[in-house]
Length: 134
Ligand code: HEC
Image (cartoon, rainbow, N blue to C red; front, side, top):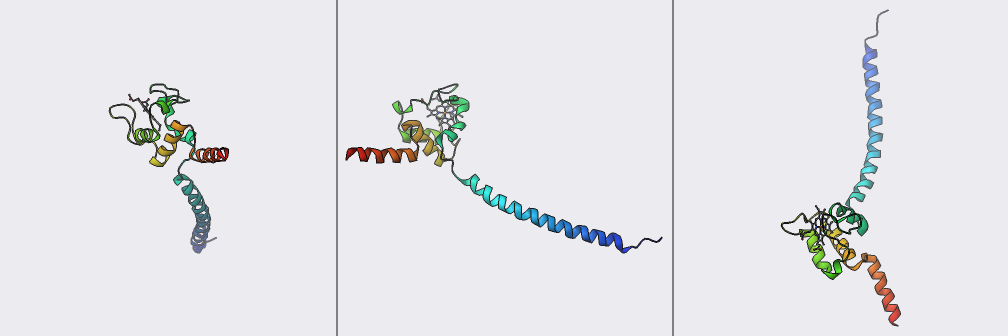
């Protein structure tokens, strides 16, 4: 029996069309995933304890001090602005490097380290204090 020479071409064409449909479906999925995931990646981390994970390697698991000094009683030493400056710019000539976390996160972290409060909690306690005053 003589083989029909058109069949291989037809097969390739069908395969090509199937591949196109499959790829475009995968592509749409991927688009959704990138759109959602991309947003997440850009959001600033606002949980200071999560941000502090970048510091525990040197400052200890509870920031109690390790190869680097404790960060637990910073308020006796620095203002929020000074700590923010240290996080952003580091301490020259030491292992304390600046820019470990983005500057937005540095501000949140500095406030938490010095005042023990997150930006939100600080707002809440201010309100509470106002109410007490009445
Ligand atoms: C690579 C190790 C390392 C990492 C990571 C690191 N630090 Fe430090 N840090 C140091 C060292 C070492 C010092 C002490 C520098 C000195 O001799 O004054 C220091 C000092 C500090 C000080 C001043 C403390 C004091 O008592 O004078 C602050 C505040 C500080 N670090 C905050 C942070 C924060 C916040 C992070 C995380 C974003 C962080 N550090 C990450 C090594 C590190």
